[in-house]
Image 1 (cartoon, rainbow, N blue to C red):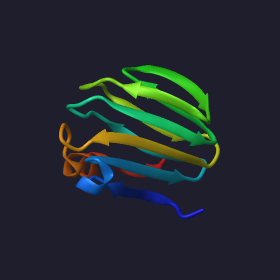
Image 2: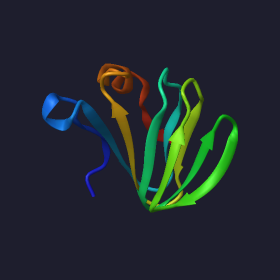
Image 3: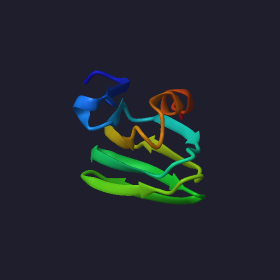
Image 4: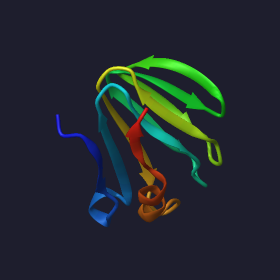
Length: 106
């Protein structure tokens, strides 16, 4: 499994939608962060502790969740995970996502 955060799409060919793919081993955390725009996230595989606006839930993939705008959220990999975030590039610039996402040891 290639680990880390990768960005795909975001151009006209992709319908101005970009996907952020996070692949993390157990024990890593996608640090708490906030975005100005809502987005859809997908836990493709694995088990993660997902905290949205202070409410923690253990999720097992395949699972979709909507993250409201201006809401603090984080993802802790309980097992190895693949986590996707789908963004409308015309509402939220890719640079905003790149600056806000950090993968760290829990």
